[in-house]
Image (cartoon, rainbow, N blue to C red):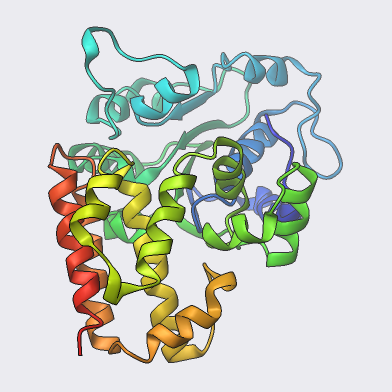
Length: 335
């Protein structure tokens, strides 16, 4: 279990304030990469700990804490897609089959007996579902049945950064809990402590999400391709869409599309709010380019990028998709 991040003291206190009258389900929502899951895990451990500390943190000494550390607590269930579990374990399913990115109905139905049992330790039973928006339709409906008929001392903790993708009926049965994004100063200071050499840039390019910024900074994945893409889109009238797509075809589709989304967000933000979020070091270039493109055209291109992102995990010819996106981007600046 990870310790609380420096920016989580206020939401932690708010969660502790709920202990006197807990709802049956809490939906922790906020930006991806700010530590919502770690916050939820700490709260679950706090509830199950036999002797929590004065600030609510688990003692790390009782039997419950030992069981949780070994992923064997009888009163705790953690549900997530197989793809996330495989990624954490560093393993893949046999036969070359890719693990699912969805939470299946079988995983949710597997909670039925757990939900109706008495707590082994006489306190709460806790189910943590992350990320909740990855439940497929049947899984979401199965969970809804349990939420509609809650049993005593059973708490569901749902973690999401896309609450709009959850069923309205699930949202209505959960207590919404907003997890705030850390300030730029908090994020930069934390990244400095982790040894990130350029924390300001890493934080800006991940939308003030420190955990995501740390992953990108440590892995360096896609850095060369990102620089290549940025160098080209800074000069749209000279952009060779076919040649660039050829050079980037082996890149991660998500990373390329995400970078284009951030760039276009900043172009629109400069026009509408005179501010830059993701590329502060490119402010002058963004201001210059923003004068040659209409806001409506940018919004239309953003829709095209969103559609491409939704299809990014499907077996499409990414080179053709990228060629189309780059030509559409170049067309934005054609007088």
